[in-house]
Image (cartoon, rainbow, N blue to C red; front, side, top):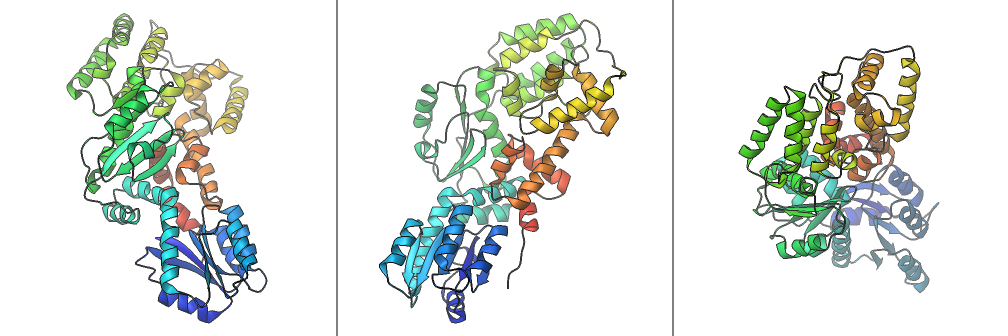
Length: 468
């Protein structure tokens, strides 16, 4: 539901607006009623307003001043001006503020309803808020909420098509998307009621200079399957990492071949020579037929935990926790195999013990994490920064905090995210990116596990302020 704020110093006008406008039909909810601009501004400072309907002449703060303040703090809010005065200067100021409508009193309900519909369409084009709630609902597999939000986005829930892109600029219009939502840095989700233009996607990839990808799920998706298929299409968008070239992906490799590679890893990992030979051989193979990004990610973490590689100290620790971190650490899957093969040691990595300088190392590492938590700082990157074994760093953090490195970093980021959710109007994807979770869905999962609710529900709970 779009959130509407009504402001007028005449109680009769406020009552008329509440009763005469078909709010439910418009998928709108009046969340604040105020009789002066200052009260409305106070509400809007603590709550997101999708639409503001305000009179011009009011005590304490007039409507144009209010509109200017709202425009500065919440530029996406649609503003509709009401006035009993037809003086052109008022209309000119309203136009300068880029308001959605300017209506004279007495209020023409039909005219104002049409203006509200136009304002709603503008909001849906931006659709940050709807996108946040949609992704929250998908993560919770709340089918009824998903259908309701899709309806607000004017999408038919019976036939949905999904596409995602990574390291490719927003291509929603070119592909014919009905809905576009930014998931993170250079990462977008597209939804449509009709199949996406495969030919247009081919053209985009053909002229893509940087490493990037588009994942298109060719079949129509049922609402109840969105969560599963969304994971698939995101993996497809990252397939360029496995292929080593800009990629348009519409499917996944044969899972039997993939599992065969995991079996070979398990067998070859029993001896350093055979492990190195296997990785060298695999690096020269056509891995696009063997792995998708999801299995490549799983393969690396299994490989990194091998006893002949710098393994993490704790069994629940991981070296790489998201697709984007693989991109930060390695250019391609083949490069990852080669560089990892170079780290193989011909005896098991011993358990490292802390020395007298461990206290100074610990404080330096914590300061580094606090300063760089917004970046993709994997355990691997920190080990290179401090010229220390990743195993040692993990052990040090575990002994001092009781948490693995990943747990410590996640708690820090979740705390920063909670602060932003309480006081910021950024989209959830923007907040995820701002605190270092470039993998948006990983952020939702970890936030819900730590806090008990999804980020969207947490923000609604924290910002729930009643005005009477």
